[in-house]
Length: 102
Image 1: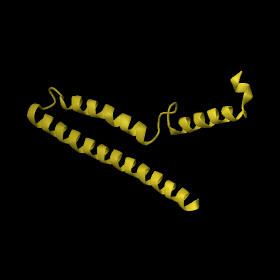
Image 2: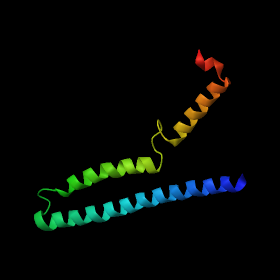
Image 3: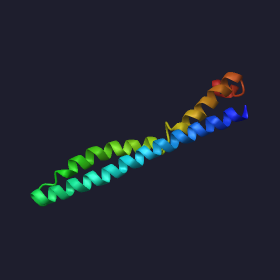
Image 4: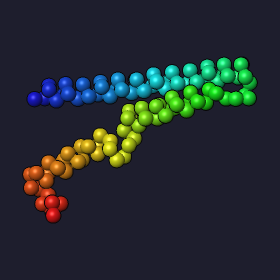
């Protein structure tokens, strides 16, 4: 059973690292593209109308949700919350927590 446990840990760790790599690639792209758009905006219009902020805002919202999902920043419905609730319901089913049923 030990090799299977180590394999599962490895696969989970690999998936986690892959998710973080994707986030950092997204963040790097965001910084480069928005900086390029800001430079282009300044070159074309000066700062009379900063249209690049629309792209920065839209992509920034997506990047924020990506960070929340990647780093489990949602305290209410994160991975830890799911595991706590599963354990709570399993304990209730086993009869270990009879008071909570009442």
